[in-house]
Image 1: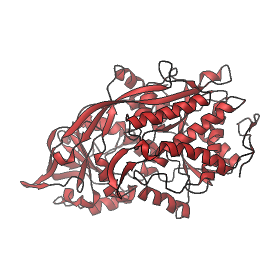
Image 2 (image 1 turned 90 degrees about the vertical axis):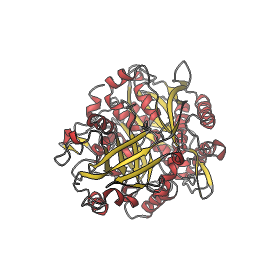
Image 3 (image 1 turned 60 degrees about the vertical axis):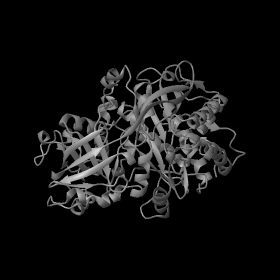
Image 4 (image 1 turned 180 degrees about the horizontal axis):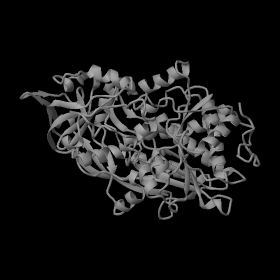
Length: 551
């Protein structure tokens, strides 16, 4: 139990800050204060906080009211706390759409939801009739001398007019961050450059956080993409990794349990491909000798939804012109397909928990007698569940001077479901932020470790990655475990039962004391980074250093 917290964790070890007001409150009591935010944001009345919904705006108003009460300054646009973001919305109507395989003149209709689901994030084509070609892992990494889009078996010239099929994963000799990066902007660019008309992904059961039934239930959700902006070309010129693709292209995900249908008659089986992928071995590439015909019917609209930005000015005359961001996302999945009779996807851990921790950090910093040297930005993003869109927009359109943001510390379902002994920190191997994280972790008695499952691509699936793409060092945090331990089983069980489910609600067990202890660590880390006279930067060994060079 941490009753009085004295922090001496700066690199120089010259600054010790006593955080007042905690001697009279236990970890459990401080955890209850954190949980009160979660209870408000993840209540059924919030209807799952879908991006742009009335309930999302109600949740955003709650966050703004708290920022005001903590004495923070507005740092959005037009003198307020909000940064409005516009989105194109696409809802695919599966009951009006169709998809079939055609081989040897025979047409095999596919059952949408059972065999495959149609993508809704990227703009879909209305109709498609194109041959299929399997290109292995679908990784375009010419800088690593690896390119599934231009192989000896299937050169790029043979992909024009085709639908590429690929399986999740990658060979063992490619670093995890590199494989994750290839799943983002380089993939869309490779499709366009090759002249492909679409892509079908096949997840591996080993890499899936939950079963196909839950994946299929998410197909009813509306997809979103950032609406085109007048300065899109300028943003892409500054930060190429943040560029958006707006061209229409067919996209689908195939159920791995039904994937043998794609490989029948090729001389290969999906079981063979899956075994190689699970072992992270090289994969063959070959024509699938069949076509896909599809008709995609969708509803299209636009919506506006805000990011929320608050600021605490720094105390140092020079460093106050620089900013450290602490962030989380407010949106979740709204109301969707029923699971065990319930239709509200509350998003308590994902990510009301992270927003609650940002609020607790804001409260602590707002009450502190000594402000950090750098200015602090408390940013709560919209549309993370739609593809990190709110954070991507903010990274390309910061509300503070370009280049003044020096670090992002992001929270997304940090998972206080067991005692805090260890933290898995995504991005730990990439930048000098690791030094601060290790130092603060040692002061708190917490083991700081890298992500043990890099091929889950978690590093590119949460909002800190938008800042990575803009050249800003960033970290994200989750409660850690050891393989095979009770904590590991609890983590895997949570993913299987509650992740993107109606069961991520207020009834789930949470360790309130552990949450409070994490919040103490998180606030101390943010202050340490803000007070460090050295500017955070990427290591020479980091793949992501290339983005920093443009800043």
